[in-house]
Image (cartoon, rainbow, N blue to C red):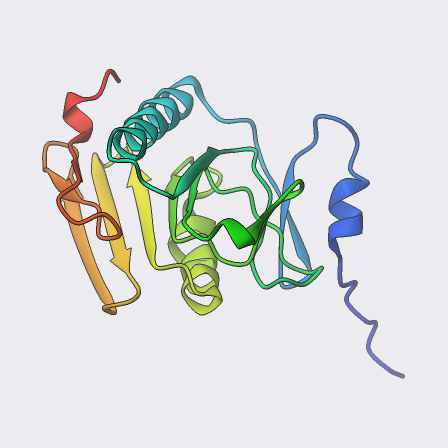
Length: 180
């Protein structure tokens, strides 16, 4: 007797979810998302504002987006994520639905329900999809883990450190100086 086939989901299944229900799709598997906490939203909003202001004040060509913002990582119908913050430097990757392909920089803010996803599943997926820089912001540990995939490098910082943004040399972010 053959084994039952595991269902492979597509972006059509994501778009068919009931209103208000959010999920991500990685390699055809659906991962449902819990609503973010107030602290998560504070960190996301402050980081996004800091990034947007830096890009604008330096006449940068990259565009930052905050969740929910659709990222179709592998330009297929089996991978759909909504990073907390996405920075896209190639305008050809943007359309009315979101980003087609890998953003240059992704920031994920760890929640209790997303810890394993952010540190393992998404780390692997973002690396293989071509993301250049990936930050994991962990407020429970006051730690930011920065992966620079171009250099195959990983560094850990505290919230009190000046954290270099590798896609923007000279730009640093110190989370302890944000209004959190």
